Length: 318
Image (tube, rainbow, N blue to C red; front, side, top):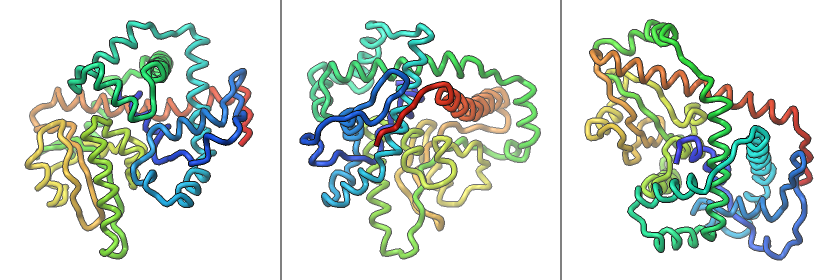
């Protein structure tokens, strides 16, 4: 799936768990978005979809509290989803059955899954095949409208690329340069508290092994300022990296992610997006162009969502 789609899914579903009593409570409307409603059962079913393992294993009272504390924020994300779906339909954008089938076939091919294995994996997530196709259709539709309204309108000129190069010439001259992403966990004040941090990192590694997107997981889990950019650290010269980073990178190929490793600042998981020599100027410019486009997209996407909210009727009833 496209990075944006995966990023959006992680934004919607991370670190939440359904309350045990959910199924016995009466359904009710928790939000009205223009002419659409979001019900309490929709909200809880969505939150249940991808609860982190550590949340599911919490004591019942802690799980309830986390759920309740996160309810309002999660509902706001569902409202944003509904607004984007409405905008897509207003613009006449739709999703064909062939697109859904092709996307599912690509997923099965990527992970070497038969239809039976794929269906069984959905059951473990609490989804029927038809429910999954509906969810996937909405994801594709959102990706289409975002591409149409934002991505296709972003153009990075050669002048902008050259200006960035000139402003950062020290970064790109004289040594090997890495384009990195990271998921970072802060170092606890007491060294005896490292185990919970390491457990959290192992949970992320499991999700990476299951094929989840690194950028989306950085957005959901990382505890530094790069999280909002999907963990993007940009281009970093080798001689400016801590020795722990250099040691880990020496055994990595482009596209690899690392095992968790400690530095004096905390616990890191890094992904090597690119490795650029000073002589490879054309490749470097292409990477810079993409980085600048991603930065523009982040700002424009937030402003676009704000505009959708401003022109809509939204009634929150939690």
